[in-house]
Length: 212
Length: 212
Image 1: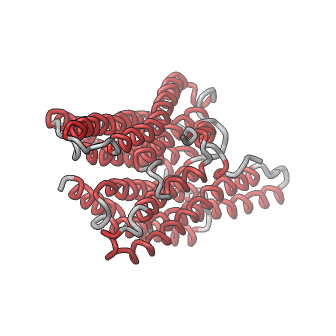
Image 2 (image 1 turned 90 degrees about the horizontal axis):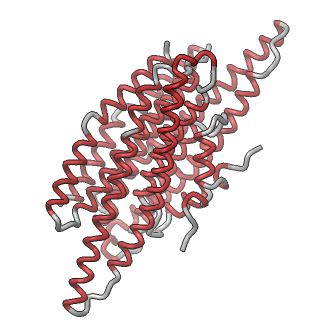
Image 3 (image 1 turned 90 degrees about the vertical axis):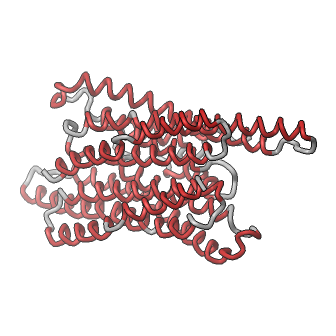
């Protein structure tokens, strides 16, 4: 129905977000902020690669650059997927429930799509969490004038993972499959381990380098 | 030279961010993520206003909605301003420094524009910090299905303020005017007071409501 997120002008995206339209919502916003974090890492790599004074880290920077671009592409896809799965969820809720059989079909459809709706932020969180080690690797070595961009990437990546976790949890709250709920809560717990400390660590390096 | 940020398609914006092009960078990304946080608050207000079951908070929601839209507009403007001031800073660095007089003019210009470059993230931080009280006010009362969006708004707002602070600090590091540097550091300290706790408080309410 609407054009792909990537084609939407920023102003129009923000207006649609702020409106009562069902999408985009918090899921796409999380994926977008993760994509911006990955984009900042790529920018710093692009500004570091091929420069004589960074020859010693050239190979590592190239590999981090490829990784960051891969993560960014995944996050841009996840922003679209969040909108798509929301559409399927709305459709499932609109299924008829006049007969008992209809109601059972509708309930099963809602359960199935809610589970898919939990998977999108789960992948958003996992992909975005992979940005933080890239920040940790780059922060001590890149040019001092662009080191703040690595700090911003780490801060945004942390907020994105935390946001995606809330988006998973709100979907889990509607699920009957307690085994899946239990397993997914364990995955969330894994994602949260060391997350805050890792971002704090990057910011500490960045702040030391800014003030050195 | 380039089209305004608001007219740029999301995909193109992220590609430009990830490239070695000087803008957009961490400053615009921070303002954009603040704008997304404000947009989520507006969305939740738009989905709450005019509904019978929320009649008791109708007036407060209307006022929060107006406030959030005002903050969003300011942040969208700040994202553009960050690009514009970066252009002026690059131009100042390119001024001639062959004679002593030229070098002095260039240095003064760089100092002046660097101070302007610190003001943009300072305002980004101040405007975005004003989103958090709106989240605190809404989180206990809005519909349970959209409460996670308030959590995402609070998490993004915190990361935006923290990011903007790094962007202020990197500009302060280049300034000679120690009185201005001192005053601005005091403002940063004010902004940071209670910031993390305020966002944590919103997330706690959101999480309790998701799992209630």
